[in-house]
Image (cartoon, rainbow, N blue to C red; front, side, top):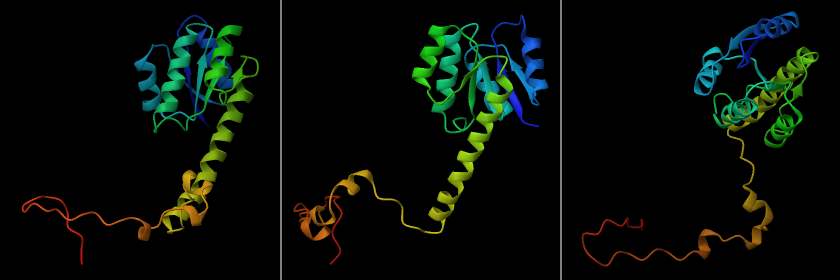
Length: 176
């Protein structure tokens, strides 16, 4: 059973919201603390998804989601927003267009879909990592894609670095 961390900064109605997620088939952890405590709770519980209730302190929810996206160890965890007024939801969609915003009525389906999509992205990344480990050539850098091979400088086009003229300098010498 997937585990979900519910971030909600108002203890009133928290049990009802957690029960709704449990009825949808999730093990539910709850965090009512703000800021870095919520961020640490995500890292400590390693949930399959984070549900952030926007009905209270939506700016805190937005900042938490952005912090989760910025950290390498948590960016794979899907974030699902729930409720919130129109202005808060619009701001969230602008900053995090990939994060779904649901109502409490449809939260179960939204979380299941977010988890499935995250697993699909993770599985798609595995073949690329395996190819890299086998020594397959990495894809060309963006700058190399746009410049034809004939126009790229080669090592023959670059003049050798001058030898140091002062004895005792630490500049490396070229091999002969």
